[in-house]
Length: 481
Length: 97
Image (cartoon, rainbow over all chains, first blue to last red; front, side, top):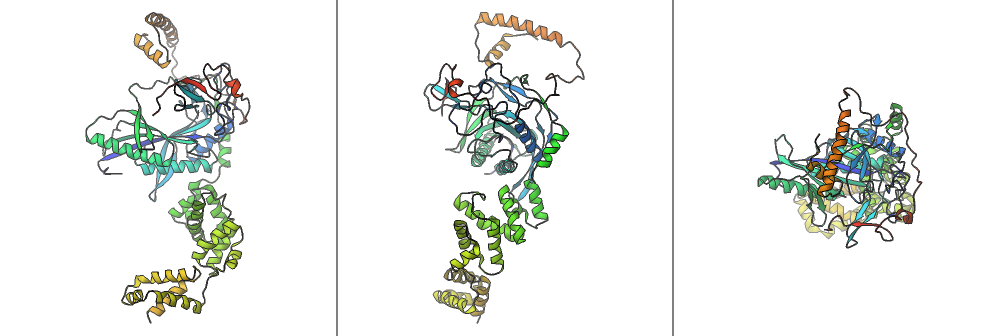
């Protein structure tokens, strides 16, 4: 951010997460994404009179899982409220939500920003139903309504206004997305709208106690857009304050083409949603035993695993955080390390060459044809000095993935065994040094840093097979003769 | 509580309804009667009594997460006044950017 020594942003985030249930929150409609319009509907989601909506017990369970993972306290007595407003994609004229008492109260989410850990404080997590979808830009005179999504089960995760930068906001949303995937609460797919974010942003002069007037930015459907929207709003509102302009409370939307926000509506009149308990939907009670059973069934959380990797396996905070960014990667790490018993080395391999392969191929660790035992075998071959790290990571690894053959076979097939034979190494070294006599003179005059250049040349000549440690030794010996 | 013109206008706006002057007068007097009736109930001292939101919490009437009860698109749109072969059509609610 530019020049914000004088101003401080205060940000609260609301994240809507579509729960990974087969059916909707109060009825049995399917919840698949991308189905033909208006084919996942029923008398309940269409808001016909006289229906009997009933709450989906899986949605309740998933909300509790998320709450437990965020250290929230779980409400014993739960009921739903109606939030009344008119919009065409809201067939009933009200949204069913847990306005009065959320299923999860408070809580914290641990995030990491620029290598430092921080806690984001939650206000609540509550269950609610989604609206349908309006399409405004296809028909000239009408808006088109698709009610497939109407009634889908969501949780809304609301933070306290405790976030101050776009980096923190992005780290928080990334962490929440990781958590919902880790817990199988949701696929967290932002492109499909299964994880959506609204940001409440205000700016005040540093040292001031009172919060500034806030704006709410909607439609933040990617981490990038969230960052851009917050940065734009902070600079917009800071310069308004600087010029003594009055900030109006507004709902704004992000325009991803220009990376700016624009006003959707002014909140001149406070919203009047006339909440009241929904009489059609039965309340429900969560017993201590119910909550305890869910608690027992929970997987080890990323933050717990991260601590364990630091304490028991001696990984740095950074490495442990990287490894626990994805549940399948964490699993893969543990499986490989069971064989190799060298956590630091396994972490380096996974955070380096393996993630490189994932990026290059645009796939997940599940889809990558690499078994933990093959990676373990490759790491051990490097440790035993059979193959150089450079050949192993840049040549053997991709070939193992492409062919599915074990590393040792690839190494033999492509003649990649590390060369430690002194005569052969000296041969390459002589060729390398003869190629750049002036550099050799510079080195001998004291430019010792040039050793890296010579080693690199030998590496190139040997196609990565030369043992770098020996090359270094021989080079130093020869150059200092 | 006094039912004012302002309150009627506010409620009309929230309900997306509009009334002429005569209807407004009628509504005002009807609503005033209803509110006065409910206000009578409020005279009861309910200090220390938890609000009764539902008749009971004892029965957890939750359902299993099973897909059932959907209707076809044809059935779903049977009563829609304006539609095409896929969508319900409603008066445009926002101007596209």
